[in-house]
Length: 68
Image 1: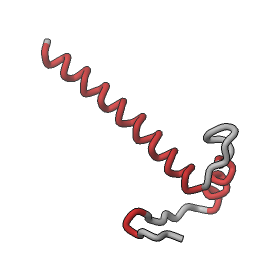
Image 2 (image 1 turned 90 degrees about the vertical axis):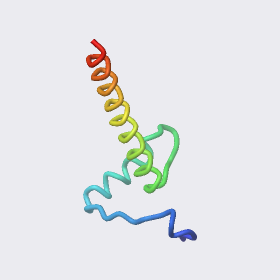
Image 3 (image 1 turned 90 degrees about the horizontal axis):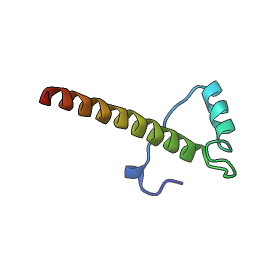
Image 4 (image 1 turned 60 degrees about the vertical axis):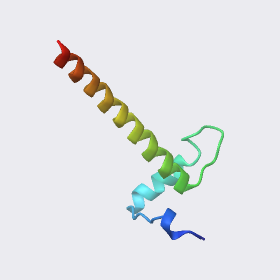
């Protein structure tokens, strides 16, 4: 049970997405079984970091062009 409600939120997903989430519990980190919540957390963090690094790379290219 959640003890600190300031640190947790709930999310609604469609049944087909929830089924896929269950299948991912053993595939996100091979050899390790994660909870559905941890799978969601990892996928969000991985996606965010990937998008953020792409954004930073684009900003660096823009800055280099401005210097020229």
